[in-house]
Length: 507
Image (tube, rainbow, N blue to C red; front, side, top):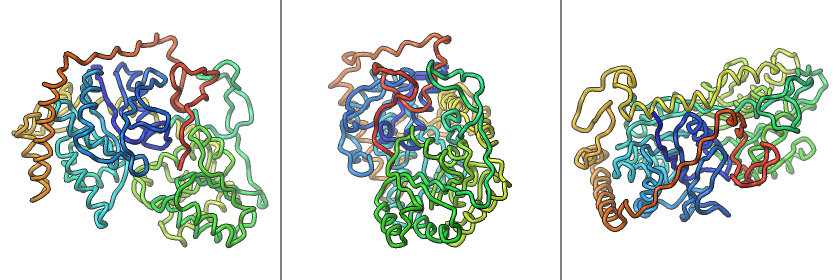
């Protein structure tokens, strides 16, 4: 059954990142499966209004005030008029929000429920419970998810975290991991093979990966590609680099990314006179990540919190041995033979890196097999199929037993297949249980939102809103072009599949 889906999030291209890539790839695959998907995000520099990406993916860049790290200022109600207009224009049936820190996402879920639309939320992050910022974020998440039909998390650890933070029934939370396009993260190659089916005329032939044996005196390159923030473990990396380089004279670093911790990293290099052994690339675009990774042998991931960690899958696909911290959902991502785990502590992280270097020098790790193994493990088509099943479950296509694995049972606030009831009184009951004071405030917000909806229905009738024409479907014979590297703006000259939007760099 085809659906009209709105993906709503503050984070999208041209800003690269894990959430941004997830939304684009999932939307593109859903379109391939016969659904209609549009993306609603805020305006980025030079991008306001409606844009079309490859595969007919339409993006609405809504002008809005951005306060911090591409997150819009939360206003609760001011987004409603334009959101309603877009949903009516595109005949939206399901609103799918992404990211706990996206104001657009939470507001869209509230407004969609007021409009009688089914809603899904995907959580990509982990949060604590003790600090003031986490407490506030968790209370807002509880507000948004009190009236959502289903929740998706990218790892089992993320599911446990989200269930606790938002006081959710575990049955209404599914785990669907991220994926990567393995063909875009190939290791260095040595011999030519058959022409890849997705290769454009004039592009080089696909190459088979080669395995380079390392001698005792060969240089080993350690690669780090990350935003330089505290939660990404930049402080841990800064403390570990001098010790690793002191233990191994034939080791060098390549570090890509930017952020507030970049100045601390530069000061450490100057203090220890390591500029000739550590190369700082600064911010890099997503399409350049593979070219950086294949220059190395080991990928370091010192993150202090991570729900999934797509970048380590990309690194393994490029044939890199991965050293990562045992935090969040990272242990679920790759099998043990591809990774060396460490505690998020300086001594253990240095020791883990030393073990990885020793294993490579002894040729105990067959990194040349990593690419094909990753290709078999992760697929965006599989992610789209599993997400489609969630849509079927909340829409009543699947029975309760088919979707949840057991009967949910009828209640005053549940409808068909356990989906949330749209009745205002039932919605108020769900919000009222969010806290002694917060519950009353949330109920007030819902009532005001409903009154605004009634006013908009009278002031801007649906009959006066033009219905947008759907993007024409390409014939199956011409659907073989892969644009998995990233989006291409329709209408721009394209010589190869690597002509991308020129977006902001990582960092």
